[in-house]
Image (cartoon, rainbow, N blue to C red; front, side, top):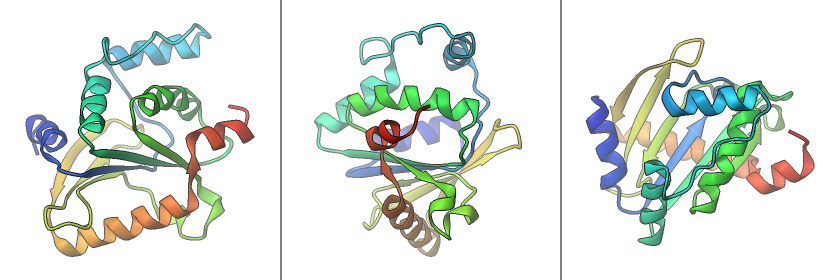
Length: 179
């Protein structure tokens, strides 16, 4: 799947997009690498909002249009440095309408087995599609694979239901844990 094909999925979904994140570290580049470096140095995180960040603008526009974005991240505790950094970025996405939830890997028996990231677009509909996301051991993106097989999409839907039932809203997680 080309980067353009991947990007087009975010423009073409009709109702919902769900992202499962299971890794504890992602290797990032560009502006995000600069934000991570600031975090590591203890400097304030550069501000992102719909006027400065095209991703946040896209998210805001589609939520205004009635589309729902949700994400669940399965985390190991204690949290990795990257997850502590990422939780701050989630707050920016949450402000523009993304429903973000956190599941602690040890909180439910099936969660430890979930190790692969995916996206599910319009799950539970005839228009459903997915993306299997591949990473190396250091969290570098290796590629994305389009998923249209109904059996695999149903598996994604079951995983989404399982993880969302085990997860708590981002603000709840942040309120009970010091990160």
